[in-house]
Amino acid sequence: MRWLGYEQTLLLSRHIKVNMTNSAKLNRTMGLQRSSTSNKQKVQPITKVVKNDENSVDLSLASITSNLHDISTPNGPISSDLAYNSWVAEHPSALGSFDRMMKAAKGKRVVVFLDYDGTLSPIVDDPDRAFMSDEMRAAVREVAKYFPTAVISGRSRDKVKEFVQLSNVYYAGSHGMDILVPTGPLNPCDAKNHTAAIDKKESDVLFQPAKRFLPAIQEIRTLLEEITRKVEGARVEDNRFCISVHFRKVRDEDYDILEAKVKYVLKNYPEFHLTLGKKVLEVRPSIEWNKGHALEYILDTLGFSSSSDVLPLYIGDDRTDEDAFKVIRSRGLGFPIIVSSTPKDTKACYSLHDPSEVLTFLLRLARWRKESSSSRSLAQIWGPGNLPRSVN
Image (cartoon, rainbow, N blue to C red):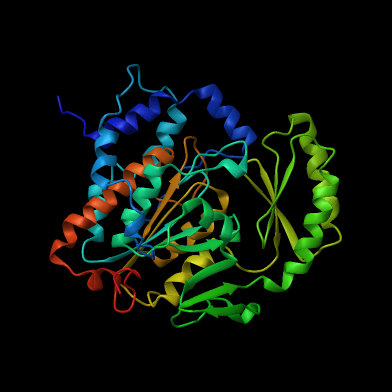
């Protein structure tokens, strides 16, 4: 009998907790669908751009890994959710595939991109309390020591930075419509289609392709706050270049009323459109810019866009992350990884069950690079001129 490794055991323990009834309910309420069988293009790993912040480390990689090994595996039969297991067969676990992925990444420059909600933090009822754990923060900090790392979130850039609390990571808020990166060659991927606002502050570049929509966004936010007051549980969140209407606490029978109210407001704003996320309606400017464009822009700004040895690695859980997955697949080089405990249509090639598996994956990634970088300089890993600030 072959003994399972720690990550494989952890993965099986996650599957034990899957319940078919709850999965069906989640699929219905979150708007998720089971994926159809298709031939997935195999791609290579990729790295994210990050900044180094060693001084604030209070949790070591070794101690976190040690604590993880103390987690006991619950007893019980493996989940009978055949649909999910079949889906995982199409989108293999990034933990179970880790060695193969890193073999492909050997000699490459990996750039890491991370979503926030549902990836680095759990999905919670109160969006203001979507805190990442100290262990996750330490893991991201460790990854950022070895790879350029960026967090791309639907939250406002300031808000996600407040949650993450790391200075060695690059931030893109509002689904990539608010990006702060170091100065470098500025060649926005789709600049011909809109006017970008570029502001320089010290050594950073602030890129905001939807800045001209700010006055209208504030008008819409005010109207939405007024019309949603009578819908119990509804909450409007200002994410600077997009507006989120959360309905996780709204009664099922009131959802149609809420959606109708939001659509009514948008009738007078034809330059905006409505999208559906996890228990959230999002109002966004109708410009050709998304998380996929943000990924390309960050790679381009850091001088990685034309490098054949660069491998983007993107981990995310939401529909908006699919745009980044598509970009990676179109490059033919990189690792798109979906975080999901239920089957869903996705362009990702690999999967992780939940944020706890994201934590394990990031710890393994940092450890792998730490061990393999003993014979390589940081300049070789990051590329000339892209070292973390604490190293430069």
